[in-house]
Length: 325
Ligand code: NAD
Image (cartoon, rainbow, N blue to C red; front, top):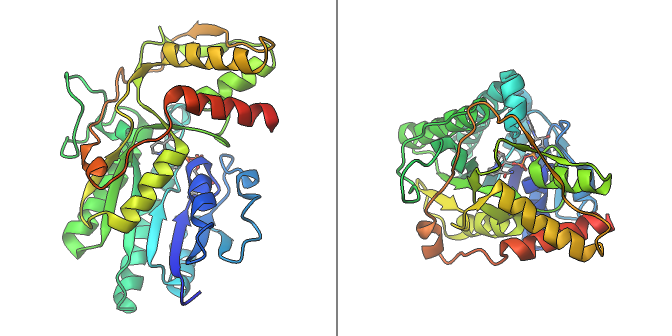
């Protein structure tokens, strides 16, 4: 392990974390430690391909358990931390925000402090990459995309907990000169996403011949990024990101939820020879639902990143994954 770059990933059994690990593990110069407490959202199947890799290790651990976290991180002494562990579903946060406050805020504070102390005690400076969301800005109400200096104005308990975590990271940067980079990414989609989320839910319902509930008129605008493009951006931030900076990650292409499901329907019909289709059932809108998220991604593009997979190609990959799994 000592000769390799030691990379700690929190939340690595989730949708994005597992995609990140599947990529990182292919590089023999990296060693990856995954810390995850395996909530309902974790999907061990997503890590089946890497489970036996020499350069991969897993510890089941809650990031809120600071003393246990300290032992593990102190022993591992990471060079890089990707912090993804979080409760991630907005509807759940509206039903009960407690666990969001715990995992997303208390857990982030514990992780920040343990990393700070470890790097201080070991006279080792690593890089901490916080994986955040464009939802922290609330709805975009202007006629241009928000840049990285936009004030945080979250609408849901989920986005408020991610905004609080973002502020904690910023305070560690300012107070302790803590070596952190903040990223805010748009909606991700791809294989192994939990079926509570719109696209996997739509495919699941379609496979059972049932309709997909769609909030309100379905005219909310989102920027959909294929998860592998997000992973490439995160790895680029590890390599070239400037400590202390915030970066936006997204395609800058806005799509309404209705249009998204229409494109999914087109791809699904094509790939199943019309055996499956997406039928929409409009349901009462989510309270506090933001109409539009829209962020400017020039800054990370200047580092050399751009998304490679457009929406139709990404949906094609997604459908193929669901049909074969
Ligand atoms: P996910 O819900 O699929 O996975 C989250 C993982 O974190 C799970 O494996 C879960 O077991 C783990 N976890 C939760 N609480 C934990 C705790 N207290 N201790 C240890 N592990 C814990 O989420 P995701 O969609 O993969 O999102 C990952 C991160 O990316 C989150 O921080 C989320 O806010 C952020 N993000 C997600 C999106 C998106 O579209 N999915 C977009 C932007 C940012």
